Amino acid sequence: MRSLSGIPNHQPPDVAILFYSLECGGVERNIVCLTQHLTQRGLKVDLLLRHVQGQYLTQIPPEVRIIDLGQGYLKNISRLVAYLRQEQPVNLLSRMYPHNEMAIIARFFAKSSTQIIVCIHSMLSGQQHIVQFRWPVLSKIHTPLVKFMAFCLYRWADKVLAVSRGSASDLAQVTGIPLAKIKVVYNPVIGSQLQKKSLEPINHPWFIKNQTPVIVAVGRLHKIKDFSTLIRALALVHQVRPAKLLILGEGPEEKRLQALVDELGLSNDVCLAGFVINPYPYIRHSSVLVLSSLFEALPAVLIEALALQTPVVATNCPSGPSEILKDGKYGELVPVGDSAAMAAAILHVLAGEIKVVDESWLEQFNTATAMKSYIELLETA
Image 1 (cartoon, rainbow, N blue to C red):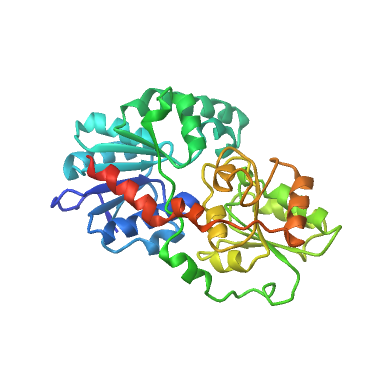
Image 2: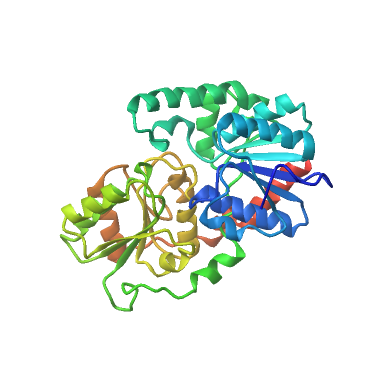
């Protein structure tokens, strides 16, 4: 890893990717996958991070330069301006707010010819759920500010991407950009390593044959994931049959969720296992994977579960689950925040009512499909 000062000025990078850090999360996994495949194709890649930290740092290919933009929003923009002037990357691919805005502003001040590609991985209309502040008044200010910045700036990007049709429609409504000008590129989820990683051994006593069914959920312990509804759903499932719940992830909601588990008397049946860098064996061997989110653009864990032939239950939240599950054809969809409906859907799956997924449906989520779209976008710079 090296800071901006001291970067040699040789061949301009084919693509620079701008993001916050590589902590656990779906966007972070997407960035890892993208850097791996771009370098395999011989492209020169820089990864610009505002915080050089996170569990996924070790998975970034050694050929990728990791550049620390430092602390502070204004400092980030200043260093990004310097980077664009010095390195002149062919493409700058930014991910999510506020990095999309930073990329557009920095190019303006750098007077650079770099192609700016901004990508939306979330729902702009759901920012009040996605970003949480200690003081509610900041949330009220933050949401309209995000929308206003997107409305003013995104039209100056060369290309605008969304990871699902639902998030593209949401983006068009917020920014006024015509929907036809927003490119939908599904995340590269199903790759060659998915099946291989899913066969690695599990070191957990619950995954023994003929034991109690295990429900698995994967995600950051954040209010937007609404794991409290899932925990309450497990309590309702227990009224009919025994089951265990394993939640893989870490985050600010851990103490509150553990308090709810204790309150409902589920301490022996719910495990908050923390972050696991390879969740795929747990997904493969679970009886059902559940996604309980309030908002999702394109939840990769649902796609991964389908690829591993694990039954799924998901909230019909805006906008990814229904798009992935083909309006419920390939998995159970339940209303957001409805623990009773979620429990009923889980019981249906545990009773053997499983929906079979057509393999051709999953091809659109293959890494090769996504990489082809990204390469086309990068090569038109």
